[in-house]
Length: 293
Image (cartoon, rainbow, N blue to C red; front, side, top):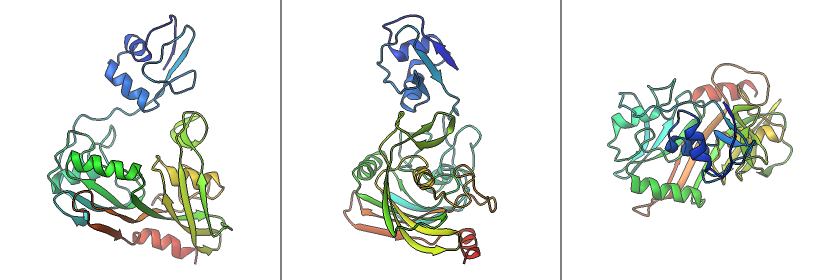
């Protein structure tokens, strides 16, 4: 949807809500989520529109209002009264949205745990993994612990390491990719390295093994942007093997990108206990990896 502004001086959120069916609070959320842009730039809700401004409202998925508990098997690596560590399987969506209202990780969490959260859509979710990314996630059992863990991630006090199998031979034994990430203006479902409406994004990588046609690397995040490792590895010319979205390379099967959250470590936000967990990638990951050996 595109709006061409025909007046000046009105707040962006007010103008859009008056000229669409969206409530003002909904418009503010869409602005925060980069769904609404002004002249192809991100602006605050308080931005005063000018005549002939072009407001673009991109397609988006409307979230459902509440998530419901569903019985399912979850790989619970650790649990106490404050938090849990889950080994998410590849192919599992993290939280409900239109088109994925059932069989998400959140549905399973609500069945297994008592989650005291004001968030009805993403209760307990401190950080996300893409649907086809497997591995470790931390879950908060109440809003206070959620806030503490979120601040710890923001302040780089939670160390997360990933395994990624990438196309090509990465010649440097280690490196840092410091490149801002934002939505791809040509495809709103994708992200890209860009200076437009982007956020600072930093990924450290270390080569573990070089094989024929591919390189196995360990990645460590300083930031946690959507699709960050997938975008960054593609940016340096080594997209992740089997990624159906980035890289335009051969797709081996429907397993999804070869990306696995292998370890997580942090100081418990309540007990101050040192926590470290590590899990092996799923058998499908190892089978693809072995096929290159």
